[in-house]
Image (cartoon, rainbow over all chains, first blue to last red; front, top):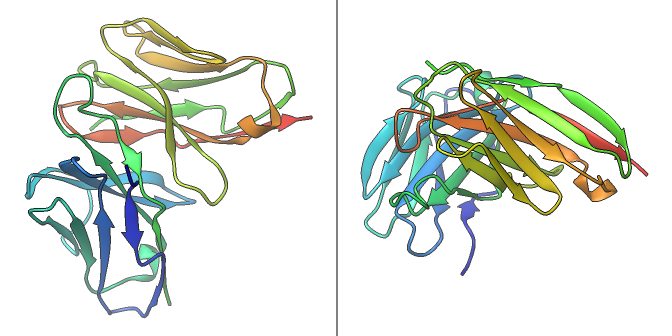
Length: 116
Length: 112
């Protein structure tokens, strides 16, 4: 099976702009989670989508939003970018159901976002 | 919310020695505890996990132990090799589904 893919891999934006990142999960996986990784804060959970519905949400402002399509592909949007949004954004896919596989996550390579 | 502490933040060991990394958590309802390895410039990869109904799990040179009473779990790597050098993150799932808190990471350096 193909792994999790994310596009674009690198992005440079200016403060105040908005950005959309894309994640394609492993075939058959219905859950997609998004994470922000920074040297200072480490890995932080943004939100999780399952079957086109946001199932869980972390503690991030409303400028961070996402959605999931019927094919399980997910997009994350950040509006009104701030310098502090510079980070590696990782998505992870999971079967999303089943005691044995509910939490198994496979990460994508990430999108490196730089805000200037 | 969940509070996860990971120690040490850096760890240097000689090749062949063992390495132990510990995470403590606060939510007694937490039920899934994975460990991820992230090599420089690469994505995190799940290396081992344990569920709340199990006390220990082993996979070749790596093992994880869970003490639910004390609310801590540890990653054990035996016979370390240079390719074990990476940042290791613990994670704690609580409240169902994908509600997760990560540890701050441990940079492991295995010296040949």
